[in-house]
Image 1 (cartoon, rainbow, N blue to C red):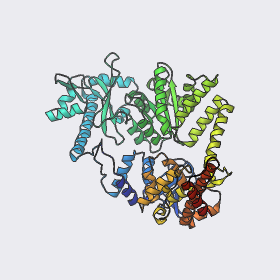
Image 2 (cartoon, rainbow, N blue to C red; image 1 turned 180 degrees about the vertical axis):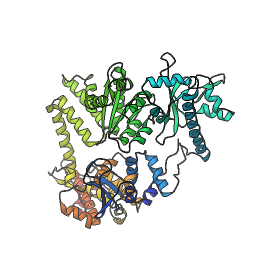
Image 3 (cartoon, rainbow, N blue to C red; image 1 turned 180 degrees about the horizontal axis):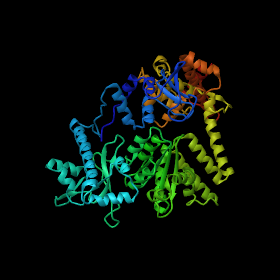
Image 4 (cartoon, rainbow, N blue to C red; image 1 turned 45 degrees about the horizontal axis):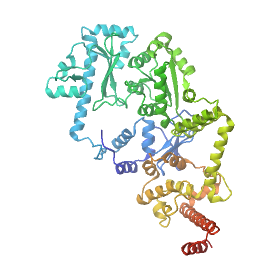
Length: 600
């Protein structure tokens, strides 16, 4: 595995980039005051609500909520993983991406060349299997099998389907003419080697499905038997240095080639399901590679389309697989995405069903019968928790809340909690919820006496300082006498985050908003920081908003002064309360006297 990309390189790459230039190369922008606007590329709209700020190096859509820096845009728009987005941006600037050495060493030049040779060999093997389908004497039975499954020559060609001959050394003889070449075939699992050292083809007498990565490179194969009693139904390449099945999906490359923009993806269990669905015009299906649907699969599919439908058998094994997929999906369930589950009748799979009922009826089945994640979640939990008793309700609440804590999307999580409240009875759960909210508001309202206005609306000193630092990171070095880390960190919620943010900005002068957000991308509060940066309506007071623009440094210092006052008052109250119970010692008396003097 390649080493990590150095953070300094990522920071430098963002600093070199103009987000307006990068976005404009993909979405035509128009100047609108200080910012640029366009119709959002991430959802359908008629009036532009997508804004790009050149000053902050940040984009935000007021329609769907999409936001981020230049790397986030490339990830979402070009549907790339983080390392691929960094590599794409590096290519744009004509620089190579360095890798850190350490526990995950970077590829040497020799290793890079080895991988290129591997991809080249696997492509040749794929073409070899495709050739055998047409020209091997046993290939005709494979062709008849594919025709019997309703596949046309165009679909077979589009997916590169081939045939592995029944001989023990067909691929070995074609590509293993030297000891080094044979070893490479073994390493890539094209050829197997037994304990006595004998080598032979891994795939024999099977329909072959080349597996391609997101860039279209062949990385492995899946083989399907022609006869029912001729070994396992599907045989997949094992893990190799270029093939990691938990990260890859069969058919995803073809889906992305066929669609520039997509509203739905469908994940199924078999290669033949993907190909058969494509034959009938349902060309947005992918398949996991003999594994459960992993978090990496979920993340990749949510980047491809906002709706993901998981299609499983309706038996116990199918529902258990669906539950594992749901659990893996929760951390990636952000607002704007949707996950559903379609359970097929016993004895049916997508391949057989679509051939029976056709495209329109199959898609109608998805639309009408696919079960929302929320319904499947609670259907599953209610099988083990009986809510006829208070104990059952308590157990359901406990397990559900543990699951819902993982959900990224605030609205998604709130709606799921609302459904839970209705299930257990409005009074019992609502009382607990109101109690928790009251406690939270009391903590937030420490600095405002009896005023328990929500933190977001009253724009507390902590929130104000965080927002200002995000908008103008240079304030940390410009206001040298401001240092939140000197304050008592449990004084107010959010103060540790403010201290961490201030420390980063102070030690990294010259960073822009996009670079700051990139540093905190994987921080537990990273999403909250991004939301605060785009929250231009955090206060209903226009005067405060104007102050942000005109006198940011002054507001920043004043907010810190308020926090100092709050700490002084808090300590005074603590000492005065103690004095009513027992006498203060001499040091505490002197401290109280100093605090009273400071307050006056």
